[in-house]
Length: 395
Image: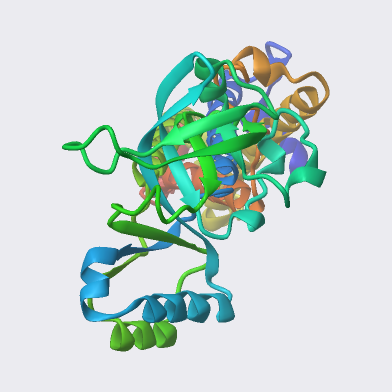
């Protein structure tokens, strides 16, 4: 039976080579599955790297408090109790206010976004720091973290002193608060919003005219706790569950990921159409042989089963070859960083290819389903064959 399967579907005894009806659909399945694996692994690795970078400071879930509106109905103690509630429930990650301020370092001056972090001692961006700092002075002096781009603008390094000036009243530019901070470290995250900024301990004087307080959360607030917040604080507070600063970026990555996946699916669809054409041609060419087999007692459903098995064989073999090629690429990238030649880490992020098990299974199922659909019409053709007419054609 196996010899018949190979002879009929795979191997051409006359040319001593594999049949084109087997090679061409197989190659398109391999290419299609490999494109889907590559696109998913690149975009997933890129997306996860960006997420890890962004979420060192901002989180997907957050609360924004309009202090002006909030304090019209509540007091400062109520705001503190809100933060304590979030801390006790393990929701609290950090809180900050941000404002554009003037910054100078000796003769170098610039304008930068300044983040005033309320729990500044818990802010430890160690994975993004370019250099070390003498931590023994942390309890004695006021220190800050400087974004990489601003360090270039200000010609500043670790342990340099910066003067930060907050303009609170544009009608009185001669009187405004300022503070000096020692640079604890330079942050290079490759996210312009952070690399263009300065991170300091919250100073009520520098941020006295600010309206919004941002609270980042470790996780989504459950329904019960959200009801408690809504009942206690009805004014001046908004829970940002589905939208955050970088939502558009992640949506764009998702759309691009599905575009490349659709391209891979399109290639597999071409393979299924090609396979359907070859199967129909095979049935027409071998119609007399099929009729003779039926007359000898081979049931029609077994003949149909051969075509189904043939389709599954191409889908599984094509997927396996694509997966093997992807594993080879993954090994080469891990050992020789070949993806760095395509995505320069100095321009893009230095990310790793990632492909989880659920995506692998999904690609396999897509390939099998599309190839199976291509077999349906040939099966219909077989069901309509007339045994007597088929044998007459052979004669």
